[in-house]
Image (cartoon, rainbow, N blue to C red; front, side):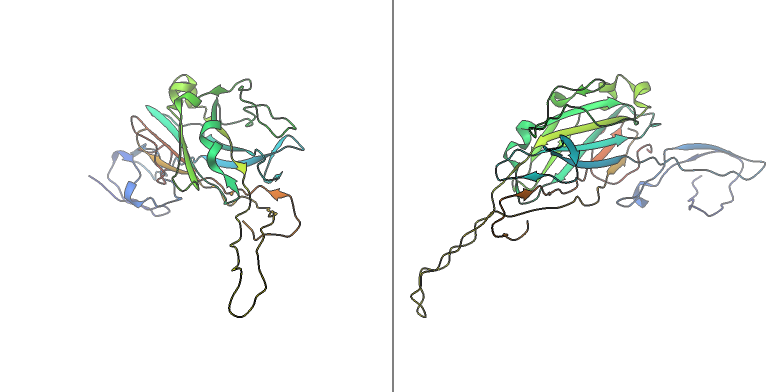
Length: 286
């Protein structure tokens, strides 16, 4: 016997054990479902509270003057710019055979994607609580590669793919449960950090004006100047699927650029034996 339940609405059910599960087809992008819940009905009203913990995602850029991860940073053309994507997997997730995290990041036109794949490093740490200092940073504007205490370098188990247009790329981890030492450790949650270099690109040259026209004999040229940029990240979203598992027009005489940050759209998924997707689903439901 199957009965459809709606949040906030009482339903009359026969006495007995009931398994409460989420309807996969009814969960839209950005929504969360619930992990399966067993409830005993009989002798009185029963209230079921959905188990819907969701991952959290953030993006920061390394500011060399402070050697700190911030929402914006100063840079000149061809400077290395180190970026950090971070994800928190909530505690309490259980009954999964595998659990993978996938970041989908969109870069601004002022960034050069040529170094992204080669510079990508991914780290994981057990526990949902704690910071994201996976690597050391310096005032030379660079991020180290050796993992800090409590962090594990999982780059070898990850895959990075940059789109042909150079505007987006994806980073997918391997199985976090295996990396963290098993399901018991994974129930405390996890943190994942991806660090990469997307250097500051030069401004897009303005088109050259015609040398002459029938109406004038004055020679005309157009010159591009270094653009000044500043941007803040847009809202980060995290998508999960439940299975039983960064340009402004040219600004004259402004040699500095601001790092443009676009928030990643990471996908976090888990399943007993399934791959990560970017479809919105609740962690902890099957």
